[in-house]
Image 1 (cartoon, rainbow, N blue to C red):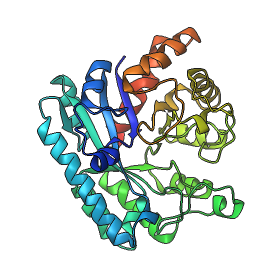
Image 2 (cartoon, rainbow, N blue to C red):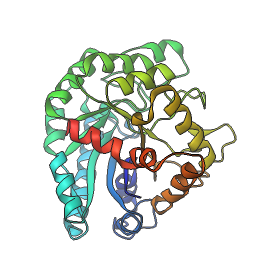
Image 3 (tube, helix red, strand yellow):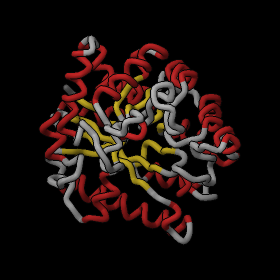
Length: 314
C-alpha cells in the first residue's frame, strides 16, 4: 500500500548520530521506505529551544540540519528527491523516486524576526509546526493549564500564519494550544494539518484533538496524521494497532474518512509500538481491513487524503 507519512524526526536524529539516511537502523531510512512503498516522507527538523542559549543559536543549529538534509538528498538522488511543490511529488512518483518534504517542528526558531519565515521557505521548508511544548514567539502549546490551553496565537503568530498562506506552506497545529487551533481556523483560507495528533475523545490527552476540532479540520479540508506514540494512543501504554484503529474509527464517525492521514512520529519517541518502523505499516492496513474498512477508505488514510492537501496547498 502506498504511504505518505506526515511526520518523522529522522533528520534530527541522524545529524546527531552521523548515520546515513540510506541505511540507518532508525525507524525511517531510504532502504526501509523503498521496501514498504512509503513514497513521501515529511522530515521534521526538530528544535528544543531550551537546549540553546538563544533563539539565534537554535536557528543556526536548524540551518545545520537543513544542510545535512540537502546533502543526504544529493547523495541519494537515485532513490529520493526533495519536494518544493506538488508537481515535484507527482514527477517523482512517475519516475519511481521517493519524495522528501522538509518541515520545522518548533516555529519558535523564527524568534521575533518574521523575515526568517522567508528564509525557511527559501531553504525548502514547506510545513511548520507552530509550537512545541513551550510558549514561543508565535503562541502557546498544548497544556494541562487551562489558561495556557485557552491562549491563542500572539500577534506575530497570526502574521506568520497569514504569510504562510501566501507562500503556500502548510500550517501545522500539532502541539498548539486549543486557542491557537481556533485562531488558525479563523486565519487560514485553505487546508491546514495536525501532522501527528489523535482523537482526545479516545485518549484524553492534551496533544490530541477534540471532536469539535476534528470536524473543523475536516470542514477546512485538512487532515490529522495518526500518531503512533503510545501515550497518545491508549492508557495501557502499549502502542497497539488496536488503539490506532480505535482512533481512526472514532475520527471517521465524528468527522469523516477524508480527515484521516498518517503521522507516525517515527524516530521522535521511545517506548512500545506495535508498528516498529516504516516497513510495518502493513500491520495497520491489515487491521483496518479486518475491522471492515474498505480498500478506498484505507487508501484515503494511507495517502490519498494527504496528497489532496499537498495538491491544494503546495
